[in-house]
Length: 397
Image (cartoon, rainbow, N blue to C red; front, side):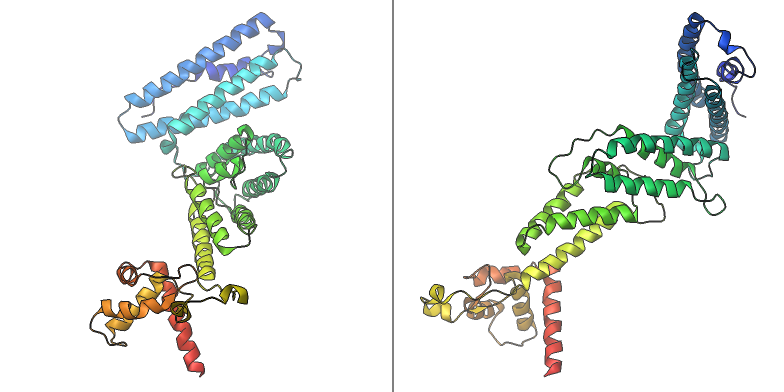
């Protein structure tokens, strides 16, 4: 069974006392309005404590769920009535302050239930039409207020416009084709509150304060992710050398990983999480740059720089593969007996002195032999791709 009704005083206040159709609120003197304002604050605290105590004393999960849903539904109706009461008064009315107090009181009680007892509301259940209309109106007002702030921050405007458009499109989906759940509406409400209260204090980092909020809240909109990766790509491509681009890419990835994630929140439940999509994008870009670095064409030095060469340097072969990658090839050649030697050590000792890379002229054969036993996945991938290219070329002969 559901618990007793603790909203009786507040219900009477909103439905009768402050309702201009049922009372003469315009005739209440300012002194009494001030007393009423203080009583509303006291009642809010009493109701908050009463709801917590009531739920704590209930042992039956079904009874708790019944109680929370009933109070939430009652507060939604009271909020609707409180807002309607205010509409009937001009902005300069002496009653506005107490009407605002009643609205704030109901909103804070709703906030308590939605944050403290979310699991009992049925987070994936359909939002009642009345409450959806109220939430939609509130969200759109917050977006309008936030827009004024972001119009002055040109570097944040494209991302903000994407958020505003995505949220409005979501809210405008027909109830016949889309179920607006408590999970979705609480998320939209939270992100709009964050947008409105965000203090913009951007430094020279690639991720803005707005990006940090969206990443933390898993705003996995395809349009936003495209916007973000385009900005990251522009930051990386601002330098010419592949090695410098790799450095920026890794730094941007590190910065991303340092942004805290709020668990179990998501904008679009049907889409992959934002952080996973970004991880995949970074992985692809890193792999691409690694290949560019490893397969880069090493330019010929000017003749003046190559006039004096030792006999040892003349006999060295330059390989575009790294030391680790050449180590894999030599070890495989020994294992398959493509080259015949007394031992693997002998293979490296006789071949390595005649090899060099664009980044290492003198290679230790012992070091290369050791690296052949601790190969990384990316090195294996590059070696395999190189061998596949050789096979393709041989087939063309």
